[in-house]
Image (cartoon, rainbow, N blue to C red; front, side):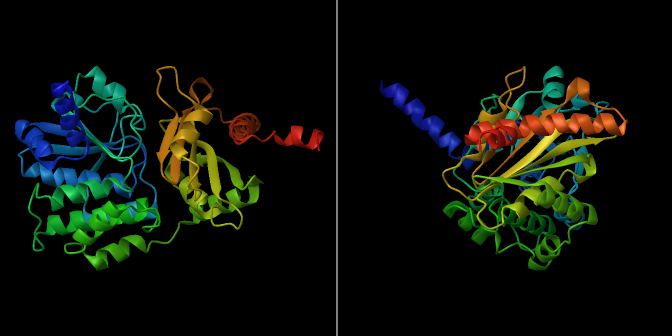
Length: 380
């Protein structure tokens, strides 16, 4: 019995973010080449975590490549990458993954990485590290796992690693300043300006404030919305249906380049009076991109768990992976259309959108406990 208790305590210590354990893992993999896997549409929290992990790995003689499958289209994300000189590589099927000795998953647990999971498995690339702040997904079996649902941003976990001395930050080191600036932006955005921050997030931001470049941070955050994003927000506002303080909006077809307009539209709808939860979704398509129904959820009601809500509404695919998930106050879903992807005829596309729009909204209404619009009218 005593041995089991000791084992449990050891496991809890690892999952709590033991920086010495992480350092030991990195030290054991010296000289290797790792791929850092972000979600398909990486946000500032994921991108900054990737940059921090990359800089940390240099001190352990580990080469890294930060990879994602989808698009980077949010104005602040583009500005962040350019101003901080972050090198992100978009995954293509022609990419040779055999050059990597291990994979690192940051701000995700493999369920939102598109074809990367299958490609890594096909090439027998082992999972070395997982660092995330979403609910456990039980998809990966890494050597080191640090999953903390009770923290507002993944960037806060990396700030803690730095604070605990995994490498020594120096104000005169340009790379360290860039990391601190990026992580600060990641914390701000993923906690909605600290509205949903935990104590650890405030402590992380306080630590980073000694090293971050305030002027660069201001440039990153003060990016205007694009014209296309404004169009999507306008469409969401015009098409929304408000039911039981839920604002539900379908925005039709979007290019993959404009996918990040969906969460921005959800953020905007949440500001409406008497709305506590907003869900915006559309069909995202593009060149060399299979169509998918993609949506974002935002809520300010503490009794609603976006991760549980989305998983219960949309369920799993044939392989057992959920179509979406989330964290406190926010979530998202990605449902591949598969065989029904494509088609240039305008009438066909409109019919297809109507079917998916109705299917998604009926599933949401069923979860809320409200009858679909037609049934509500009939029984009024």
